[in-house]
Image 1 (cartoon, rainbow, N blue to C red):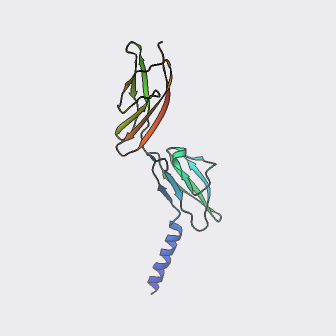
Image 2 (tube, rainbow, N blue to C red):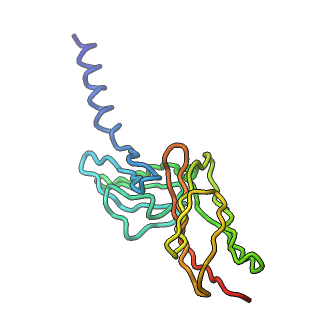
Image 3 (cartoon, helix red, strand yellow):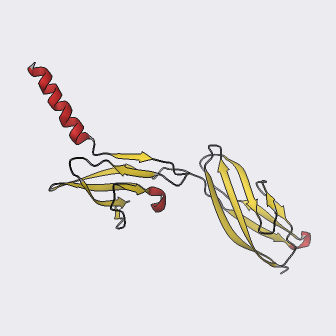
Length: 176
């Protein structure tokens, strides 16, 4: 009987102190990747840090990491007079980064758009909006602009797992 009571006591001890951990939820691609500090025994958040730098506006148990970007996150918790820190590495999180280049070809009266997006995962879809009513799903499209002016160009890329990223840039079409 004494053995069972000892095991039961150790079990309670482990649960009580073993729950102060960090849990990840959401996804980077959906923009809702969060880390939550599980608070036990009246613990409070002293501060959140990213790559060793204090994030002064973050004082709750949950932090949205997409707001602050990739990096190594840590939180300092205080229980009574004791402070303890926990760390969670999100520096390896990958998602696509949309980008493009544009080159006006005056002799052909067209602009060639070159996809310059990067991703650790294969990009499988491109959605272009050229700001003139035309769209394309080609990776490297060409477009004829009717007027000499600045157009707002948007490119959205999608990876095989459905992760997306969008970029918008201005592009001037002019006979120069």
